[in-house]
Length: 321
View 1 (cartoon, rainbow, N blue to C red):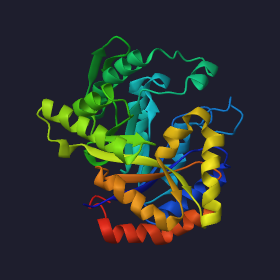
View 2: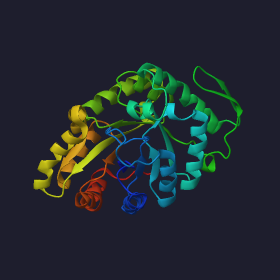
View 3: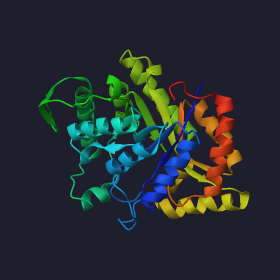
């Protein structure tokens, strides 16, 4: 099965010039996907002590700086922006990129930044309700000439969203999350694609099976829903440096370290091939390395120049890229 190989680049602890250089390096290396995340503060949380760029402005630069990779955000928290405004931003980014942008939505998790910036951060169930309302509203804005919508959280009145996506295409919409119930249900109901962050191959397989059942319950072919996973990039150029990577995860993530460790590429670049193969066997059609500065640049260069070509030989390249 062809495999999409991408990168999820956190826009923190880097100058914009450095971010732009990273994007160009990834795009020149032929990665299939490059995304940012939607935060105001750093992740993992450190009380807003680290430099961090806003997502939509960052994505505009990313779309303009690259030429071939699909571009996305994994994922926008629907509580930070009116869905109609987000639809308008998505179309704008699609035109900047020449038709490569894909819109990702999620229920959010970073409560500290929401409080700091004055946003309500309701209980998880309510955030999922907001997500369930936003998906069809945004899809209507992206596909219909006019949209009037009156919901519990959002509304529009005879709203248009012009121009449409490039070439009138159906702009793909992603759902991000690893929840065991609402996430699979919403993915099956609304999403073109689903992304899981920092899970083990075993967890991915279980979530994939649940999503398949949710699709079948709706008479939807599970094969119509693309699946990808983000894995923390903790590879090191040599064995000695790799032995220290686990301590870095512990220091960065604290109580969340076991979860992050389970969803990370750890070791040397040569060991990444077997790790990624386990995710492909668990149902991943795309694997994105999640880059959070600082990383081992030598290991990243080896991954891009040597590991990706080996993975291409084994799994092929997506026809859509």
